[in-house]
Image (cartoon, rainbow, N blue to C red):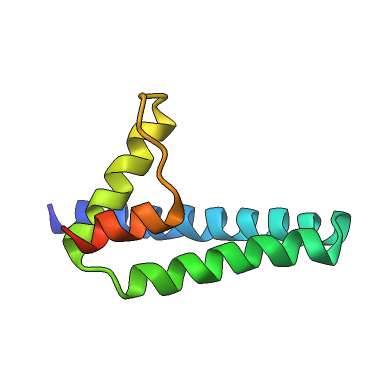
Length: 92
């Protein structure tokens, strides 16, 4: 049983590494084919998102991910302004 777990872990790590390399290739292609303004704006969104989530409680983060998931599924979720979203998350 332990050997099977180790094999599953090795397989997962190998697939994870392949996925990371694919992402790096895609991002490098995007940077080469888009203006500095386009890709730096996207980096700004990512960095700001990381900074926001770093200061969130576990409950706030999970609420945010839940709402995000509902939106991706096409469910009718009230869209909040950034200010409303921050207020909502702080009140959790």
